[in-house]
Length: 130
Image (cartoon, helix red, strand yellow):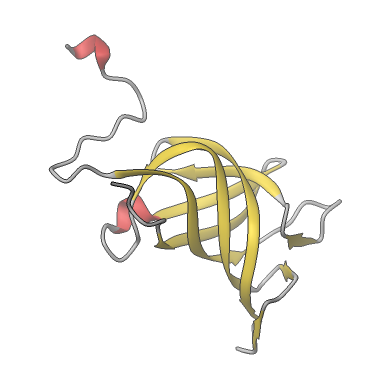
């Protein structure tokens, strides 16, 4: 029925789109709140993808790349103007795909305090459960 369809529902073919609560992604940090000049593990913000808004936490930072292209594996923070590979924990499951598989379902933004702090693309989803 038409009444059963709501904002955020995803129509997909078989196999269905995956709903996940953890993702590994590449982000580009564009801005940070005045009271938090760097992003570290534990940073909380809002995850925006397609029509979804969900609370998320940066669980782990795997590596960063600064503006000069210097890569730091196992970095502890990400600053404005840097790129990073991170793991995000989402508060609830969200239907997502990798950017490589389906670009529209693999793009997102991270926002907090009225600012877009980062844009990103999903590089890896958790393994499928049987």
